[in-house]
Length: 225
Image (cartoon, rainbow, N blue to C red; front, side, top):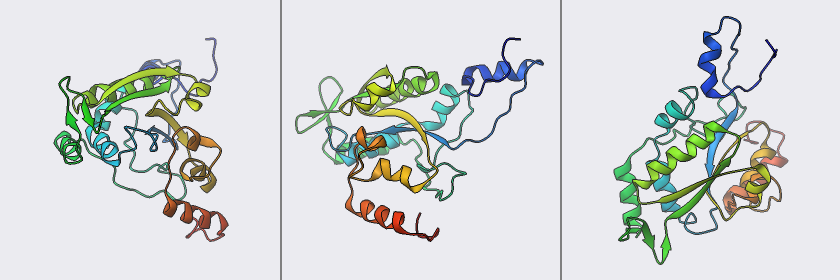
């Protein structure tokens, strides 16, 4: 009886809210995405094959069921479903055999301790997540356990925003965002961006830069996305 509105109750509380006759739960599909970002300029994640293997090794459906009490939807793009410009890329389905094949073909061999290694680089990562977010904590921990089956060792650590922003060496990062304009995507993916996620999850691709620069100059909605 001491609260009128709670905008973002924890996922684990939603069932209790639904069952309480004194409370109303109003829900809708949001534009916010939870994602795992890599520093693509730093070992071991700068190896594209390792990133692909990670994508194939994680069971997103099981994580949604556990971490979000089933109240989520598997992303098929880095853009929210109801956001203008959304394109369904299909997403990934867990295939541990394929993930192992990708690593082995790329030269990532298991060491005596079970951790994969290539050219002296060990498949070890620190996965950061917002310390105040129980869902993303569970997501990080579930991903850690699943990647262990692949021979990738992950340490998880809860941090605040400022710490995440200055810890580019500690990737991947489990965070979230909502996109509403082309500029927001620019801040993540453009090589020369000095703001936004590009600071702590560096990505560089000349072709992507070219298209994004052209999109920002265009007033045609068909070509600006």
